[in-house]
Length: 508
Picture: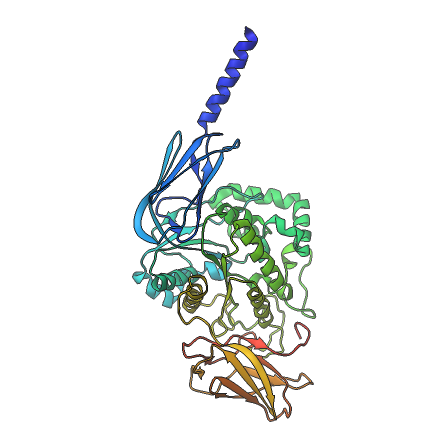
């Protein structure tokens, strides 16, 4: 009799424990949210084990049953855009109502400080804010996790993104698509790409494997991370920098919990942290892992693997990635000597831009050209509006299939004439210069690889190059410098993409 009573009490306790598990919807689902149009929309959460769960939205009613671990998921069928705020209702033993839900374009905006750069600090962007409409934002709280987290900290709000790049992107995309736009902003200044990489990438990126092995072995760092996170908002600026410069742990807390939230794509404004200089430049402290993050030469290959990993995790090969090219900047952040910001032979961000362009080898990717933007001595320039505008045009054309002019001229081929080089471009209708002068930023060389600035003239949709010092030019570099002086655009004012035709060793 005693054994039967004990067993009954245990079973009753377990039953109450199961019933005590409240019905939860994933933390990215809050009032005022935007759901992605024209794609299946996963809705997921937790409940008591084996609990029956019903999800209702916009005329759709889906039923499922939670697993033994209490996890459940349904997928809403693709929907048309809607400005009507409707309720998303999830019911089981309890009921959760997410109110004022719109359907439109959802994009993730991520990266480091130039993505975080505040919209109010950019005069051009600030001037558009009063005219913004039908834009909503989920800003992810900047924090970290030593393991992959399930919950993200933040909530949807009926406001524009605080980021200048994200706001201008959303503003122009909303104008072009004429649908609600939802931005998930997850960015943190001075973070490297390694900070946004899941541990699974250690299997295919050797330097990241080394970094994570060292990070795991450093128990003092892990303890300090935990202590700083526990302090919450009271952490110091120095502690804040310490957190955001660690590997992997930003991904764990600020990106992983978003998966598999339906979206059209991701705008990536990052790279400055990985612009380590080339061989021969002064070395930095190799005992600190964040000085061994991938440099400019390796970045392109790592970026491609990163994009492929995110698509695998989202199970969405159509997820579009818009990469923001590094703008003009006169000298590297770790250089210990002054360099000529206009020279095509000095070590500079030109090499990083070339690396970033490797992402175009993957389908459903775009590179936002910023070669005419930036400041020679300011790593945080305020001219963010063109970045968002150009990004919105590329997104509209490549991801939404809208017929809009989005592409700047891209070098197609170079022909040799006697004493001249002729450069042909794609998307080069009505080539012109922004200041009415001859095209600038072109350098040419012969077999000796002694580069000289070229005399350039426009002939229709081509540019003809020559230099008195070179009788038989063979190679061209265009805008291949830290802060080149460029003025060549097409009829829509979109700048020519940087390029080089020489086959010299990387960094030379």
